[in-house]
Image (cartoon, rainbow, N blue to C red; front, side, top):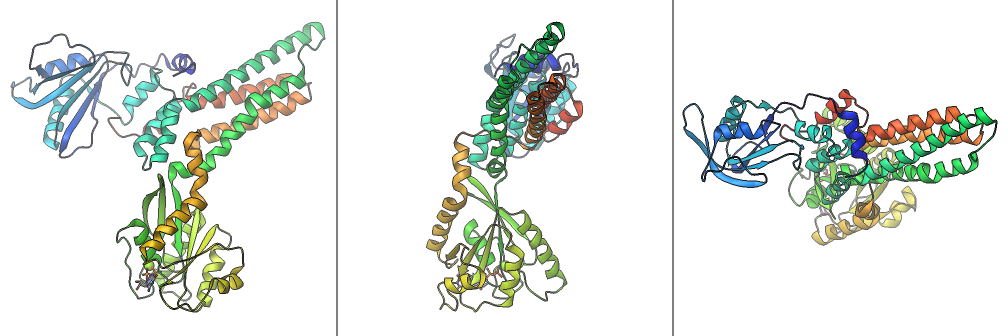
Length: 477
Ligand SMILES: Nc1nc2c(ncn2[C@@H]2O[C@H](COP(=O)(O)OP(=O)(O)O)[C@@H](O)[C@H]2O)c(=O)[nH]1
Ligand SMILES: [Mg+2]
């Protein structure tokens, strides 16, 4: 990536924590096809060559080639595993350091023995995220891209993955870098005009043009990207739906039908589901989190009351509430009690049990709860109805995030907070510029905004922040 790298490199050079050679098992430990051990650092090749015996003699190892051979215990010369080993010379590697990867058979004993030997040969066990941290410290990626690596690893949906890949590719970095560049330009212009005014008592810059420039080249695009955060949250974290309704209306049955497996217990006895049960499924490439709740009802017992408390909490956090009503029984005060709890949220009514003789109609529901409510009539036991309901959800609620997922850049929470701070400083600068006498203060505000943007890219050395970010990684990434 781009023009920001020299900045990152300039800010981070001089850190000397990167001089030793680190290693870690990069794949999940357990029985499997292949387990990979990664070594990175100046001694990577020397460490590997103490243990590795290639089938056909090749010394020194050539970069970016795969070698077949055996790992042997240097003390006893006993074979430990038959492996494929690759050596990648710096700087064309993940960390920009020399890297060795050993593809072993995957098993607990094999991997831990090879790891032990690599440690004895002079490497140190990597900390969580240390490989990616080195990629960042060596300027191969900036901080926002390093964060995208975590999101890629955690992505559970195709759309979430796409959004994270866009950040890793540098789409956000390029924008932030260009705003930073524009602000720097404005600041230089402003500083020059301040000096100039002092010397000549003249006004060489047009503050009107400057505020316009600030507005168009930074303020507006920054506002636009912040706007994308909220919708983008759904792509990243998933769309949360919570099922509510009085007991026995079919909530757990709907949960199981949407998940296509028996997750929640379904019984004809009211009050079976006492806790909030959570699971998720993929709808049109988007992760949908589904929460089945205890029915909201009057006069519950103690355990059920706790369940109801949790239900109300999930209602408050949901993107959409699915309110189930049993169409084969008359509406009661218990339905009213549910309505009272969800009325301020975005919700849809599901008039369920349409396979049974109807005791209430769409009209009855509208008369009681208002005509603007969206009502879906269905039987959750009918697979065709479930298919139509899935289509309804996509059409009514996932269209916008899906469209966004095609191209938009979606900042994460940390980026969003930096962008908000930058925006606030830019707005203050904008106001100061309009009253043209406060050039110096405006320049200070521009500087504050620029620093917020730099912190998105990680230009500002902040060990605490780096520790916090890289602690979220696993060892070996
Ligand atoms: N006939 C019919 N029965 C249903 C339907 N949906 C759920 N049920 C039954 O209603 C009872 C309660 O369902 P359940 O999912 O446990 O309701 P919950 O208490 O709201 O979670 C069970 O016996 C289900 O089989 C439906 O669409 N039609
Ligand atoms: Mg239930």
